[in-house]
Image 1 (cartoon, rainbow, N blue to C red):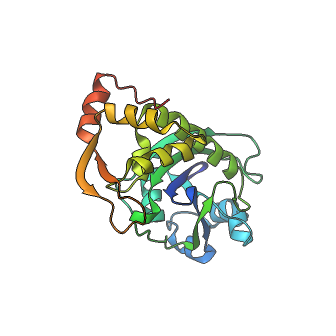
Image 2 (cartoon, helix red, strand yellow; image 1 turned 120 degrees about the vertical axis):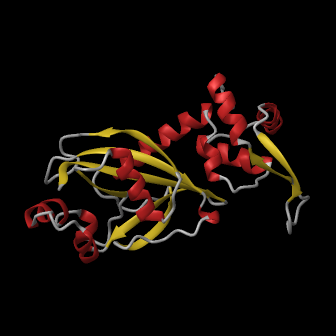
Image 3 (cartoon, rainbow, N blue to C red; image 1 turned 45 degrees about the vertical axis):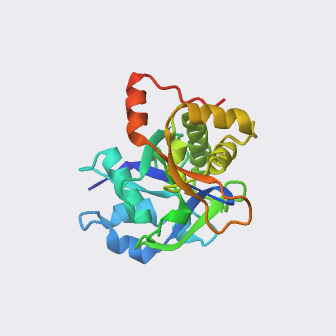
Length: 249
């Protein structure tokens, strides 16, 4: 059985040269119904899915979500949704908040727990979900029509992300395995939507001793090749336990 009134929605952020984007999908109605557990009654399917905007019109796009099975905890179900959407394991995932406005879903009462995830589109081969007929990255300033209050969920996810990157290095989940200092600064400027002083930024981030110099430089670039770094997760975990303040500003 599924919980009619409880669902999970995942905001998947990605960062590349075009900026910060969000991954959205459109669902194939027949594939969805075939994938639902046999114990779900026809009445449940009709009420929960037949009136869903993303299933009744090609205009609408959706976050990755679903109603929670009664035998799954929320974090476990969110991780399974993320895997269905991307084919990826061990991806950064964090809860945003609960969305429970009375009329957020017009035809039934649904409380949704939102999550956000971070991946780098250039360094993963995403596997399109078996129930998705379309899968596409969208610029946050050029979102298509979204179902229900998914725009508000994305907005709250961005607020949460901006708070997190000020104190924790979650932004590194959007970078490739090896990256330049310019790429780190660009990432933070895009997320926080503000320019940073290059000298101060680099001084502070290198003083944290969280970066490992790979000893290599960029290849096949038109400009002067920059050094490549990686993130030392072991150092971060140690400093985190001791009370690390990752605030960039």
